[in-house]
Image (cartoon, rainbow, N blue to C red; front, side, top):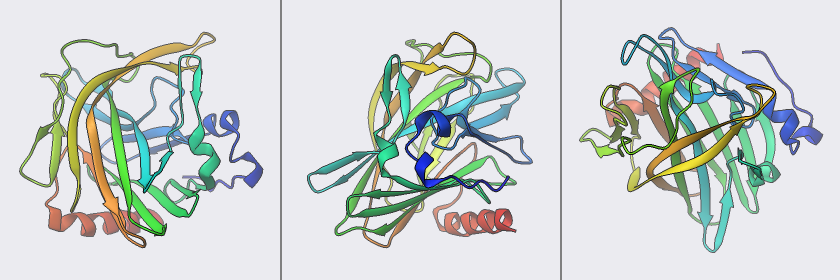
Length: 264
């Protein structure tokens, strides 16, 4: 991935940041394809895109994005940036103070007294995406709430609300699995410790992709439920998403291996 230096004055400019793409591909043909602020503006973008043989041979957007909320005492912060219909949700931009695209995408935030770094590492050899949260500074414990937004559709199509989508089922290994439609493989969400899940399946309607065509296109994404974890100051947490599972005891080792291989 190219070195990319963002001028500090551009870090609150939604149009500028959302038009600068990040595209990472591994040897398994998995993709992380979005933009610098992880606010998809094209139908083919997503956090986890996989090459599948079923339902038919091709690329599929499985996880489109994550809605992220931080809670500390009476304070609540929303990190996600998106456009729903005519409404821009860009509050996360005001907390952003650094964006790095190389050797892997990292975003740094200051939210009052909270200092947070978030990095995305697509495993070079496995169908796995690591999202690492480092709470570099905070006065007290912080709770993280993540709402995955699922597409489970071919890369050049769009998804729309339907009554066939299914929520997570708990697995015995270190987290949760989503088999949203019967003809798809399961997508796993897991961590080495402390990941919780509360089912709340619903559709979020009207995500806009203004860069697809001259006329904007819209999509509905499925939110199967809420994942959560807590961090104390100086702690870190790694969420793993993919088509295969790791044992809890191996997650830290595999994360560090993938990180080192990209940093060379």
